[in-house]
Length: 273
Image (cartoon, rainbow, N blue to C red; front, top):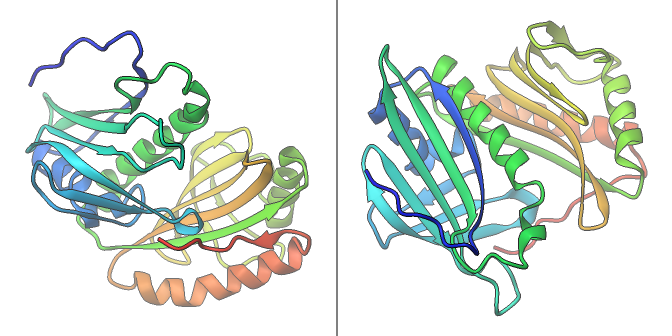
């Protein structure tokens, strides 16, 4: 597995994580549709160089790309050429490398952005590193605790004109989840739907929990600003054969709770794929 030097106009974000898995297990998670859905978004992958990859981003629609590297179980890469409506936009490239380590672990390295032609497009990368860091932590949790389990996604999204910091304080207070700390076991209260588990990450305006209620999985609570608006997310990955049944019960309960607690925030409409 070799890499070539980047041209001076490359603009890439890079993240990595160590996971307790073999290269073959990691490959299933990073280069197949069911695997990618377990830590990123629902996807379909045509498993060959030149094949198509489609990723589904909930209210933000779907994105199509072409597989540019298919080297199981160590290197998977693809390019998205229609990610922007600007005709001069450079291709958006994503590459994932898997390196085995002693002791049964692997280091997973992900690079995403513009391999060439990125000068002047730096603003498009804002927030990308944060998003991929979250994805790599989801991957770590999945391969550590839920490897091979089927995945059902849970996405709740609201948009508002309120400041992000205010909405985050209101969200956490409404759930009675103030003062979160990594390693704690916490449970939502305040009339919220069931949500309980171990706190995995806490950062400004977001938190990640490995949950056992309403079912086994991972849930992100977050607020961020994008496109001139503030976005509130409750996003989950539900693992196991009962995931769809858990979502069928949890989704309407969360929707009703968000409508009651944040009446001025509107539901985001899903654009056509």
